Length: 234
Ligand code: C5P
Image (tube, rainbow, N blue to C red; front, side, top):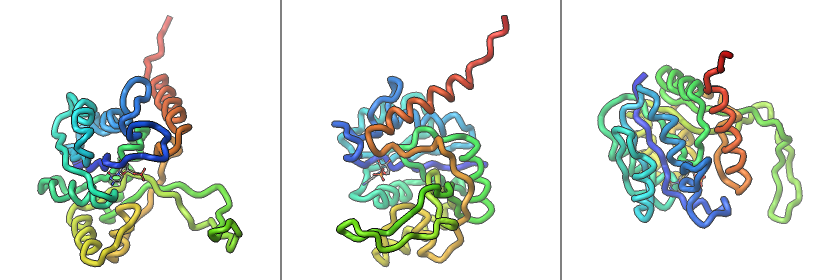
C-alpha cells in the first residue's frame, strides 16, 4: 500500500537532558532521525517523505536523509501541529494514504506500520495504541488524588498515525478555523467528527523523551540487529 510520510522533527526536546534536540542525538553512532528515516525508507511503498525541521538544524537533517530518495524539508512551527500543517501543505497529490510519525520514535516495527496502513485504508484514520497496565489517577495541582480512572478502555497512543490524505487535510483545516490544538493528529480527526480506528501498537516503539530512553532505544535496536544477522552454520 503506497503512502507518503510526514515526520515532525522541529521540536527542541528539552526533557531529554541533552544539549541538542533529541532527534539529532546519536544512537549507536547514528542520529535518532536517521534511524527513524531508515525504518521507513526501506519500505518500497514509501513514495514521499516530508520532514518539518528547525532551519538551524538543516545541515544535520540533510545528513540524516543522505541516500534516501524523495525527501523534502519544510520549516517547523511553534507547536507540533503547526509543523505538520506546514508539511501537509507541501505534500503532493498522491499517494492517497499519509502516515505521520514522530522523529523521536526510531524503533518502529514494520509489521506495526503495515497494520496502521491497512486500517487507515479501510477506515480513513488509524492509530497504534497499547493497553495501559498501570493504575491511572487524576491529581490536583498540590498532588492530592481526586479520582482513580477505570483503565479498561484507556489506551496509550503512538505513531505512526495513518490517514486518507483528504481526511487529514480537512481535519487540519477544521482545527485551524476553530483554534483546536491537539497533542496528536487523530484528535483533530476526532474533533472533525470522523472515525479513528485503533490497532495494536508495539512495546518497542518508544518515544524518546527522558535521558534513560536513549539507552532503552539502543538496547532495542541492538536486539533487532542481532535477530536480523544470518545464523552461521558450522
Ligand atoms: O515533544 P514531543 O516529543 O511530544 O514531540 C513529538 C515530535 O514532534 C518530535 O519528533 C518533535 O521533534 C516534533 N515537534 C515538531 N515541532 C514542534 C514540536 C515538536 O516537529 N514545534
